[in-house]
Length: 250
Ligand code: PGA
Image 1 (tube, protein in one colour):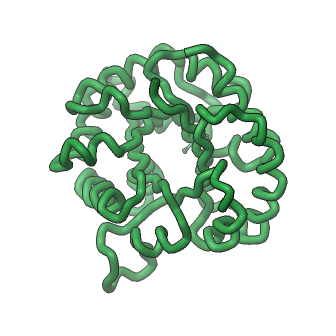
Image 2: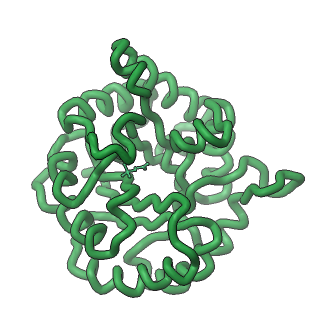
């Protein structure tokens, strides 16, 4: 049985104070969520220090939104795996479509970041997904499997086994237009098959996930949870989403 994961990607939202207030409100709300749902919060870098001590009980895990592939060096504005580990970060999103679109992440840097995260003791949540143009041209599977293979290229079998994947169709992110769960399931089946060793890998769906539709995704055999933007910003809404993720039998 693969682990269910609900990861909140806060993007560039919440100051350290706002993030701390979120956690204070959120923790009591997720007490009853079954353990088979791993809950992850990915605040901005500047909020990690405020949030980390509040999560020390371990029920909710800490994630970051990006990582550099070097441990240190002349890389203005970047943050490395050892810097994240110091704040007890366990997960890091790598290759989010916003990083690829606005910050120049490529298949190569996504591969380097994935490897650096693993080497630094972090679990990378590697995000892949197609534009509407690619989808309309019938190229979804080719594109998504290419991105998946590129991100995992050169990793040992043991490292591949430590990766989490996320399928996030770009046209579904922040648009309120979520992907049909059966279609997302089919894309994930192709992802799982495109690199050896992904049978037990959690694959998350991302793109306009909310507390109402999450169970439609986790009811699918290949979908192991959600990478959640907008619906993770409110404690009640995200706690409800985490509970509902576990409401279906798998
Ligand atoms: P959304 O974002 O849930 O707001 O669509 C998801 C993501 O970008 O990870």
